[in-house]
Image 1 (spheres, rainbow, N blue to C red):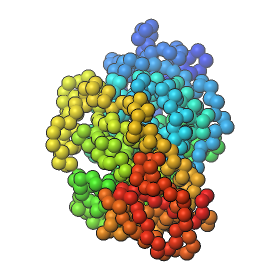
Image 2 (image 1 turned 90 degrees about the vertical axis):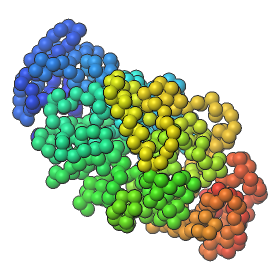
Image 3 (image 1 turned 180 degrees about the vertical axis):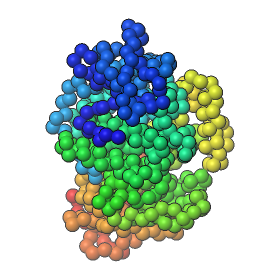
Image 4 (image 1 turned 60 degrees about the vertical axis):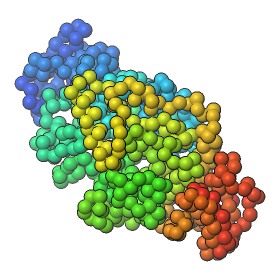
Length: 614
C-alpha cells in the first residue's frame, strides 16, 4: 500500500477541469464500469495494482452515478452524498469548494472542553444541521465549549441513532448533507465552539451495506455484537485500513472537525504489528504538522486498557482521551440506580471516590460481572485524557424505556450528579436536554425497509434488556412515534422546574471555568474521602492559587459533617440547595468556615468551599 497523501482525498471522485478522476477498490471484480444513470453513460475503468480500478470520466458536481461491478450497478463505497438514500445512486459533490471563514480559528486546549452531546435528528423539531445553528448562542450562554454530534454517516431512512451508517464518507441527506455540516462547523468556530464528531469504525450497519460486493472489507476471523468485524488484519486489510484512515483525514481536513470520538474501539480486532489506532494517530499528527491545526482523537473503550492513551513515545497508541464508564457506573449506583447488568459490579460511594482519584475503578482487580481480573492502572495519565458524565446516549438508551435521570431521580439528585461531574478532574460531558431536566426519553429508533431485519432488531433489543432484568415491553424501534417521543420539547424551558435547572447548570459550568483548582485538571492535586455511614463524599482539589473542598451528600436526609482539618479558613462559594435553584438551604450571607466546624448539608446536595473567592 502506498503512503497516504494527508493533504488530499485519494479515494472516490476528484474533479479535474471538465472531467473527474475515479479510483475505486474492487479486487474481486472482473470488470468495473462507471455509470451515470441520467445520461446512461458507461465508461470502463482500468485495473491497476492492489485491486484498484481507475479512469477519467465526464462528471460534474451534482451528477448522480454508480459503479457497475460485473454487470451489477451499486453505489460508490466512498460516496460523499446519497440524496436518494442508501439504495440509490451516489452523487458527485465538490467538498473542497466550500468557502471557509474560520481561518483564525484555533482548536481549544483539550482541558477546556465542556462537551454537549447531541443527536441531530431529535435535538430540534426540524432535526437537521441548520436547526442546530439556531441553538449555538444558547449553548454558549450555558457554558458549553464543544458540541459532540452523534454519527452522521449515511444510514437507512431518516430515523437512526447513527451507528447503522453504511457510507462512512457521506453525510446523512436528511440532516442537510455535507455542505450543511461544513456550514455548522464554520458557525461553531465563529462563536468559539469546538466540534467533535462521533464515527464508527468497528462495524457498518446491515441495510444498504454494499462493501462486501467490492471486496473483503470484513472478516470472519472475529465477531462484533453488531455483525461482521471490519478487516483490519486479515488478507487485503491494507486497503481497508487505508479506506478508514482516508475517512478520518477527510473529517479533519475537509470538514474542519476538531475531534473525533471513535465508537467502541474494543470491537476493533487488530493483531497487526501496528494497531490501526496507532496508525490513525500517526496520520493525524502528520496532518497537523502540515496544516498547523490541532485535532484530537477520543475513544470509547470497554477495556480499561492504558495502552490506548499512552503516548506513542511510550509504545502506546497515543489516543488523546477516552470515555470513562467506571465513573458513570459508580455515580449512578450511589445516586440510587438498581445494581443489575453492569451496575452490579459497582459499590457506590467507595468506587466513586476511587474513580475521582484513579479514573478506572477496575484497574487490575477482579470483576464479578466479567468473571475475571480486569483493567490497568492509569497513574501517569492526565485528567484531560478522560471524559466523564452522568448521562449519555448509551446509558439512557440502554434502559428499557429510555428514561433519563429527570424521570428516575429527584430534582436535587439530578443537580448533585451534575455537580459531581463538573467538579471532577476530567473532561465533563452532558447529554442534550439534561441541562434543563428534559423529561423526554431517548430510546433506540430505526427506519429500515427490510421486514426481517426490523424483526431482528426488535428481538436483539429485547435480548439486550434481559441482563437488566427489565419487565414489560420495549418501545418499537421502527415506530415513528418512538422517534418523535425522543425529540426535545423546547417549549418546556418556559416552565418550572426546567428554567431553574438551566440556571443551575449555567452557574455550575461558570464555577468550573472561574476557579483554577477546578479547571486545572491535575489529578495529583486531588484527594477524595468518604463518610460511609452518612453517604458523604468529600473531594479536595487544589493548585498554587486556590484550594477547594467539595462536600457531596448522597443521602436523603440533612447531615452534620465536620469540615476537613486544613490550614486557614474557607469561604462557601456554591450550594446546590439554595432557594434560587429550588433547594431548601438558607440563603445566608457567605461566611468563613474553619477546620473541624460542623456544617449542615441538605439532602442530596453539594457544598463547595474555597480558600479565596476567585
